[in-house]
Length: 236
Image (cartoon, rainbow, N blue to C red):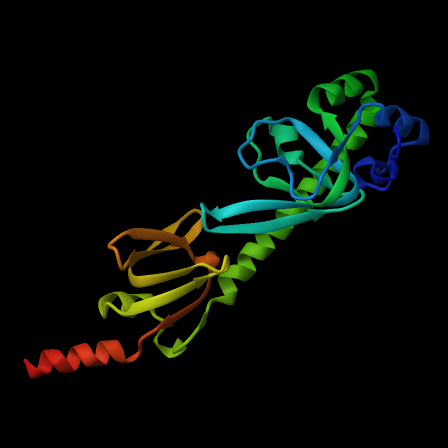
């Protein structure tokens, strides 16, 4: 293998002895990618794991189709990615975008299983390290989700940020998303699901748009609009 510093410095091989490391390195193949290309995309089939040797690869996940793509992980030398599909052999949970020209080492599930059958002790060490990587990332994800819910929204006229009030008064809002996209309309419902809260907005064309709470950067609305409508009703 031309260069293996990325694997040798990776947490994935922590605990392997020198001879076990040498044997494990033979399971990998090397691939090169140019900046701007995808190694794989979200929902692609795949059962391979990657270790970065050089360059930068970002893992991106759509939290609102066509609107908000969030970077959930950046892998540089020694960084491991693609581990979820490697373990469960299901679709990719995120896309791997090459930010800077990258060289990566690739391990297929079948090659790893063959290695484990031949060297069960070393294979168990790698599995234990891989499990630790997954658990650490799961904890980070859970903490980020908790902070997102606790942080709330930055709002112009924040004293009126009560979704039930906005719905009842048919207040027109301008919602800025983390993607930079703007949504104009009226909030008509707030839905709670296992994924969190989603805001349902009716835009100016009458379309219904569902927006995840954590995809919203800010909300601005016309504070005077409800008052003006109330005055008109009284005049009648």
